[in-house]
Image (cartoon, rainbow, N blue to C red; front, side):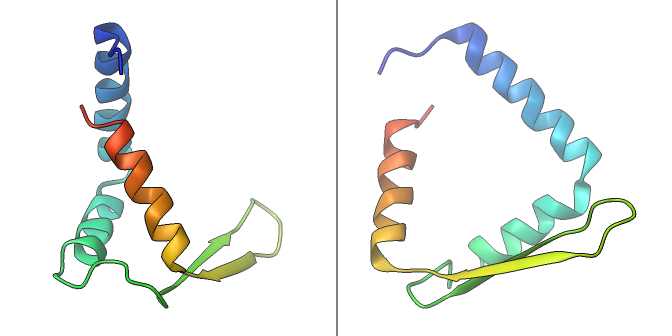
Length: 80
């Protein structure tokens, strides 16, 4: 894969800004992904979106082996 240095710098800058804006989120992700258990088949991931002035909307999914394979393939393709 041909890596564009300008794009990499832009993504790193955006990542750092995201970390500054949402410091608790990184700790949460690290706890979930790096606790030695990781995300395994059968894990349920739930997300809730609450827009200003609206009721929350929640959805979830149960991780399948094919989901894990997709994430691994994407991760390998975009290693920096």
